Image: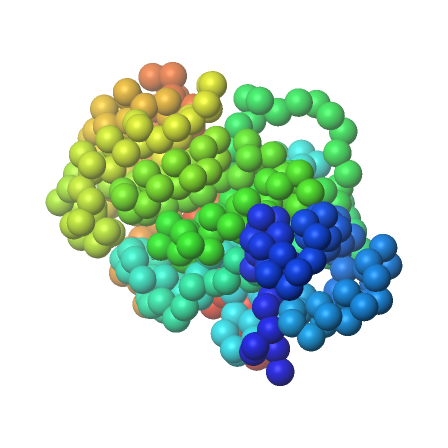
Length: 374
Ligand code: SF4
């Protein structure tokens, strides 16, 4: 029924202006509608009471407002919430909410599956089904925001996950507010930039979701040309790079993207990424037992990133079915962590509480699907 209609949540404010102008409407109408969508969370045009009935009727004939509702929500004892969202075509994606010291970080998906085929990743084994639309990306945030209003989180984790904690202020915050967005769920966001960029524009629009671009982090496995495009089109967004290996030989093997964009090119792109002020590139490093977890790896890692403003997230691998990799030992994790800390690198090692979330994109989907079938 909606096939010929335009999903308004696919449109940035300028695109919505164009859409309405194409129907002969004044420009300010777009701002009114945009605010209804993101500030009032309107589900239908009949709610838009400052717009004439005639225009509401016209909109109803040409456009619609999509939404997502989770079909499963799993809450961990640490306060982490995992959402599984069914999509209109029968596929599904996941989002993960991580409350940290009273501030909420939401990890969202950008694709159904992923084409990047990283060897250690469950999502990679699903292959790419399709890109998420802009609407499906922003609707993950809106659905979680609704859930937070109904059920504010009580418990918090105490580990920072991402972003610019150095710049955090001490403003008290509503437990229902989402402070940080990380595009680190299912999919490679830079493989879907045509939809991800408008979604970020809606997130950071002062009339849209009103997030600060300092609070949005895009994670990539290393699509070098797209890193350049992201930096040009949305400067000031945070960048996280899933590195996971310190030699091309190993990275070629566990992350096929490296065969197209080897470490030297990737690190050059990191160096050139426009990060303002004191902000740093986050290097994600999934520690695979016996594969990339030695002190030699730590030394090489330090050398590779030393001329880039950096911080490191160490993510001990969580073993999952059908994957040949092993978790690293506690001793290996501690030694790696200490090596970097002793050399003044900001390092966060995610423990098993929050660690399986954004680290292992795709594991959640598997878990929740089993649960919803049970
Ligand atoms: S780690 Fe990220 S980029 Fe690699 S296959 Fe998984 S979802 Fe894709």
